[in-house]
Length: 314
Ligand code: SF4
Ligand code: SF4
Image (cartoon, rainbow, N blue to C red):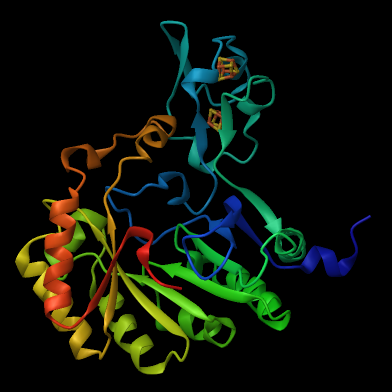
């Protein structure tokens, strides 16, 4: 039986929990991926996390064409073409029942996320912590973890009170009050910068960079933990000398001396097919090592330490 306390407990949506990661903070860490984002970047490697509520994923390789999903959907959102289901997703966003999943025994259909309580998530983190060894901690990512700010605050506070190292990866596009809620419980912040030309930023992410830059300035002035700026490097989008110079000027202006550049990869491409979406990152090349070195040199010549990929010293 669920007690009154349990019923009131803060819950949130997550689409993945990965134990034993070594890339997003010091030591061995548990990464928690929260659903929902305020940006929609064309190169996103976690497109299943952009929607605030779990969406329907279809794995072609697991589908045996049995047709159960088509018969179970009450909205006739699934048709069959050449022996495989084609999902017309206009009703799926508001669908709460997800009847289509019920008899998909191969796991070809699943949801990109699930609801979890703070207590349950904390117990999973505690279980993982016995494998961390020295150091380690929790990193909330996504999606944009501060979009579900009450849930993020509750889990970060719980970890902080238990002396667990805490970090977030944020796109920065949020009201400042969302940051204020979690700052007391945070040790580290990874903060993404994408493009300094607002028109380009908007075209690529469907949002302004105005709040992002304001929040970056405020954090640089007020956050006492470690703040690491990250630049996803997308050739043909934000790797021009002009944009790199703008990043350098900005970092100098807010008195920061390090940047982590994250080269574009296409590892999330298959997920777009699972969501019935087109992947637009294909038009951009993965940066070569030579190109990465050239960009890194621009930063180091300006007195900014530049770490490529997972090179950031923790
Ligand atoms: S129920 Fe699952 S396996 Fe069967 S057709 Fe639908 S997606 Fe494919
Ligand atoms: S999520 Fe809902 S609307 Fe979409 S296919 Fe499944 S049952 Fe139909």
